[in-house]
Image (cartoon, rainbow, N blue to C red; front, side, top):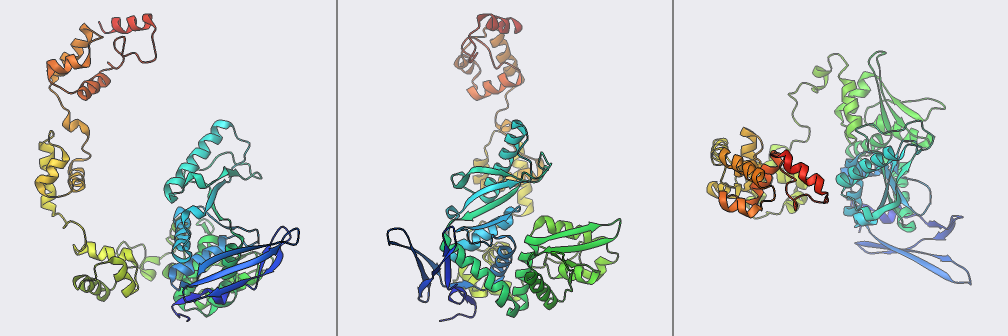
Length: 492
């Protein structure tokens, strides 16, 4: 049964699946129920034998902003050829994570299904040191920001663009990440799904879904021209295919934005103040953080833009603030026994994170009640005045978590280091130094016994006063007797 709030993938299935080096056509077979579609195709191999390939996908994909944003991103940045592989590339971790999460939620894929590598716009003919530093920097960045598994990386993790004179990356740039899902059947299903939506279906969607789709297109294909000297302010959207340029133009016109298409020019041009303001107000530039920042910087140059748009004043309310009636409904549902954030989000048609924020703001859910500012100050003062008391003891005393104590202390007095718990009198420090001067080979336990201090305190004193390598057994990796004697004499 078709659900209007979902996209039915049965309607987007191709009749033919191409395979092999020659892209041989094969009939797609499928069967479906209310949850899943079973797909298969058969190829002929040598010796009159046949091989069947199969795959199962969910039948319905949720029809929401997230789906249409990702469809726009895929249309812009996904490989379109029948190469047996679904790939997507972008230089922004937020966008990569968004696409991976969408496939995980909609198609039940996991992050482990994706292979990956990094492409950098640097000539490969660079010295080994620079090459090693560049690759290390890029790999660490993408592993951290996208939580990738190095086991899923290509054998050649970093790939270079040869036709460039650049020999190094900018400090704040980490290359482009390419993710790949190697499955010919799944790849062609997705590519056809994206193509059919772009060419035939998106035009009939409501305004919100068209906005979401164009947000994805713009994030993947736009560039911002910001030239205050000449006064040229514009946004260019690349589209190699003329038909795609016409589609994007029509969609933008539906949104009240006029676009220029020039003959023999692959970009659509959005200029004029009124059109750029519509990009701003409809938040069509927001998906790509760097492009959005550049766009905002460009828009600031228009005189009177603050009064006309309400932006750049510092007083504008967040665009995604929940209406009061929805906030009240979240609290009502929670108090009536519906305590799961996911369940509340589904009932009200909003995101889980917005539900969590409302619950947190109203001290609901599995969290500690907010600490008052006066209590924070008391905790911070108490922590400062009791350096020998550890954070756990202080937290138990005030009946809060350790993180609350640390945040309170940080707010008023900065970070609380280990030195707060290991201060010793000055005379003990002098005595430690004297004991090492008298006998550089003295054992740590002898000092501990005489002064009643820990071994870690002795270690800290030795580091601070350059007493690290003392005595025969303390000179690690060096058995040169002359060197040992020189160290000993230097302390006298």
